[in-house]
Image (cartoon, rainbow over all chains, first blue to last red):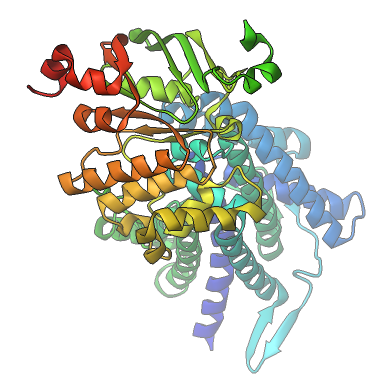
Length: 292
Length: 249
């Protein structure tokens, strides 16, 4: 029973990592850059939802929607102001800019909301729990896992069936050839940031519903771990982000439960190193090949 | 000059479909294209031949909007198009089948073709697919196959078919025979001739000068970024200088 409990907790935490990892992996796949500010967009999303619930008296669904819209705008703005001017620049310059944006967001949050941790309010997400035999599953867990499944199915359908989704795959594979088809690359990259950031808002709210302490650095560690999950699953691959996120969450919870609480994070990263030694492209990553 | 009035210009019969004038392109400090002027008339196949590094692909990429010229003008169907980005050129009726094929390796043949029609309304795509499958029956057989699993020759066919899907006024082909076995080269050139016979206007860049000159109406010979000779393709094929430099005899 305890084993099952840990497994469910692992799936829930892993689902949050998976949703965040999607943002990393999509942006990497399409814009070929690591957006290290992604973790902090999560934090901003959580703060906005917090304000909506706590100060503005929004119903939870409205608070979530407002946080998503705000993060979408934030993501597009970051891309347009910080990354677009560097489209032709060396990838190292873009990486450093992303780290800069990350600190900028954290410090703006520090200015607005202060350093004291806020306690994320109780909503329908984390309000109660369901008993299943001897298992006690919180609604936050169930909603997190369900949200992950819905997002994954939605994104898969979007990229495989819709014209815009297919255009995204084209840009991801060959930006020049995509332009020759008539695809507006800048607009496609903006769209990617918009989707990734809206998902970040959802991830932030889910994260704070399960672990209700909110401070300006709330996004950093989950951000780094989700990035790890994206690499683990094969960066650039949407199913890879899903698989990597879930596995990482499960490994983390099991590691903490059965091996060592203190070493939980170390175990996660050790697993990543081992996987990358064996499969450098990640679990589902595809090494590119050229036909002659 | 009549080009100044786009509406009058398109109606005029003898006006070229594509008119490039005094084009200069740089890669940083390197002056890759040094004042090229050329014309393509409706219904023609025109070829640009020349050695490696003569500026052939650079010229095509500049016309397609992938590179920005430092100087010169590009007029398509009477409308100036220089400075138009690559993604907008398709909407103006120009399609480039790029060097090295550049098909979408992870997409199916059908998806590749659909992306070729990205610029066109959804309801027209099915008819274009039929048309393209009629020209390339091999692609019809491979419709559901992933692009990266096709052979080199099939990938070249897919790249040309994809470029046709936008129903271009002018189709530009960059080295379509590159890296293909001789028998496939013949096949690709007969497809080019068929496309021409069905009314597609083509600007062809080739290193295989023999083949290119034998299918083209007119040709320009490029040497280190400038045009050294131009004229009727059949005549250039007999020209001694051309034979010595590009045909190995």
